Amino acid sequence: MKKKFIDFNNSLVLVVGDLILDCYWYSKNYSILSEKSIPIVKINKVKKQPGGAANVAKNIAEIGGSSKIIGFIGVDDEGLILKKLLHHIRIDCDLIPIKKNKTITKIRILSENKQLIRIDFQEKYIAKQNDLLYQKIINSLPYFKILILSDYEKGTLFHIKKIINLAKKMSIPILVDPKGIDFTKYSGASLLTPNLAEFEKIVGKCYKEQEILQRGIKLLSELKLSALLITRSHHGMTLFQNKKKPIHFPAISKTACDVTGAGDTVIAIIAASLAKGYSLEEACFYANIGASIVIKKIGTETLTINELNFKLCFK
Image 1: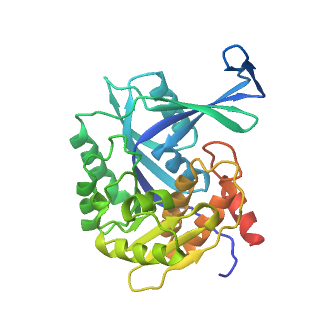
Image 2: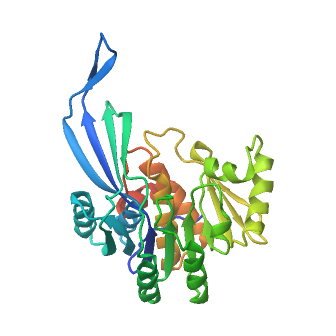
Image 3: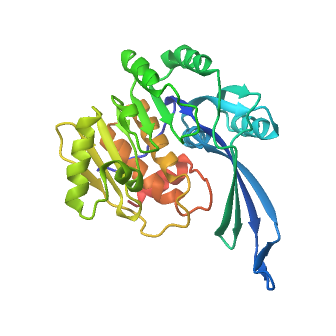
């Protein structure tokens, strides 16, 4: 593929999905209380970042695109922190506070770049305002070129079939980052981006390359998708499209420091690329390069357009 500098100015992407506050507690080292084998961790630094669907919106903003996010937060300090973090990186937020819920928060404790434990607060958003969420999507969609549905199975995308049908009627491409064991709810989407483990939950364990290819083509047809992209860690990514041969994008980096949030980066770059007018093949090519950058960072990290273009120069 021809090398060229890219930009995502005026890439208008609407993100709808589960918002999470990611917290990282860093320790330079830890010790063991010998008599009870209890680890003792001295925290030297605390970092808070947008997670889940909020990380997708952040990725789009950091590469120069324009994103708006719709979703739920709790009525708590964590919700306020998450909202401030999103405003700080110039993301348009249309968030619905739920009084009886806490903002979904994940705390990761790390020492010497290794995660020791993850602590989760609040399992799902339990909301009665699903009609309000849908109305906000109706009001916003006409102003955007691409819709991302970021599903972390936290309750936001309760009416996902309804949302997909709405976007299809408006001829707006729908990109879905899926979760769970039921992919039929994503039927009719433009692009589905499961990782290999998520794909295998649906189609069964794949021991050979040919099994991935055969089952990928079958799932594409069964769900009436326009395209399916399977992200495969150090094996790269494989793209399936209707009436086309599968395209494989080999992994650029064989080693990873942390794959947390890499799927968010992939779908964000693809969405921004499509909104800018690049082809799906080009979009996946750029996303594969972007993923190779973020997996070398610790935590839910993003990349800049300069990092992406620099890597393109040497690809």
